[in-house]
Amino acid sequence: MRIGIIGQGFAGTALAWRAHWAGHNVILIDKGHGGSASWVAAGLVNPLVLKRKRLVQEAQACMAAFTPFYARISTELGTSMLFPDEIHEVLPDVAAENAWGALGAERGFEPFTGPLKPNVDGRIHATSLATVTRSARLRVHTYLEESRTFFAQKHLLLEEKVTDLRPMETHWRLQNDLDVDVLLLAEGFQAHWTEHFFGPLPFSPTKGEGLKIRWDGPPVKQPLHKNVFLLPDGDGTYQVGSTYAWDGFDEGPTEKAREEILQKLSSWFDQEVEVLDQWTGIRPTMRDRQPVYGWHETLPRLGYLNGLGSRGALTSPLLSDRLLAQHLGRNAQKS
Image (cartoon, rainbow, N blue to C red; front, side, top):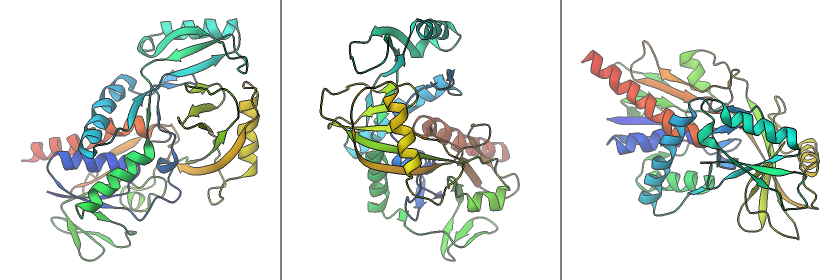
């Protein structure tokens, strides 16, 4: 079966691998990654929404899916891309420590909330650091770029914008001369074809900005979080962020976001830093912050996956598997 996939962020890349492993002939169509949040994501795989002190939806299922998914890709590509990396939540006082203890006692949180550790770094304004267990770090650029190269070398990548797309009686036709049996839409926030066929999606996209920084002084070895994340890249540089904005999508990096990030970081971390770079991306977030996916009720073999927001590295392995399983199940019922 020939499966066309439009978009190569977290959703499209995961769908491409799943379809490839299932023995299908994959055609990945993507014009490039300008503005895509996937390509600038920090790659932190975290089962907790620390800002709101809640679990990611279906955290256990997502965590069970992502490790074997990325391990298999690493084996096929011959490169490591996923590493265990415990997050430390900065707890400023005894009240915060007690709240963390209460959180760990709640149903579903226990596998992901570890013990408190004393803070021994005088630069960090904290009485202790709480451990988020089973978190990890994905080398996002390695994953996306190496995956893109893999499909390109097999002549399964079409690097252009889809300008013509039509349902035929038994298949789909793209760009006037490319026919596929199944079409999957993974367009992110620029969901032109998804909304054309499925109607308006409940989008509430957010613009995120972050910084790459360095400093002269002792390193920080583990990811830290309070009101922003501080993530060591292992080469003496760090990523810090990110912001959330519901406007300014056409702008590049802004001074306002830079100042906001540095102010938040300095509120709990006393270290003079040098800003090396600033990045921005548009997250395909839905109003209820939940991903959306499914198959068209009347048009044959048309599916979509969108709305992964800032959790694409974690949720895409599970949801891509579910979307394809839905199609196989539906076909089995009709046969």
